[in-house]
Length: 241
Image (cartoon, rainbow, N blue to C red):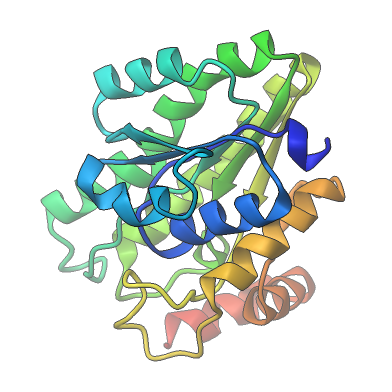
């Protein structure tokens, strides 16, 4: 699909990878893009990129009524990017119930909620693409972020389920599995990080090329290659980090 025919909606668009998606899609030539975040004031910076093309939407993916309202308002969307995310610290032995609930509600249930609401929109518009921002920890877990691990693994499973069901409706479901990205969310992770704009551009190109699973940075490509060859060794390596 040509960029001029794309009308994306990005959740969690106010910073990090979401903000980078806004810039990357604008650079690609879209004529309209919906930027969604929990607070309208948080979107001022991305709206300033191009106030004629960037349409702000207040959307907290944990609130069903806001998800429904967003789908009703953005009725011309044909690309949904489920990017909103949460990450709390805690090993399996000390993660709090509230932290675990937050990660699951945003990263897993939020993804489901938003996809379910926008599938009728995509169908009405002749089909489209759902892009789910997952993580390499969908494959192998890091002990210090156990809630995040679990939520992304569950989201990966649901991505495959959506993909199978929506294939007959002309809706492609894409899973994106980045390593650490240079954002506020990952600032405490002591690893080399990829610039968000590089990830966004890689994903947009991957979608254009028809990819279903995208590994948008050097680390994710290496992890997936190693996992494909010997997943137990990757499990042990991540488990000791």
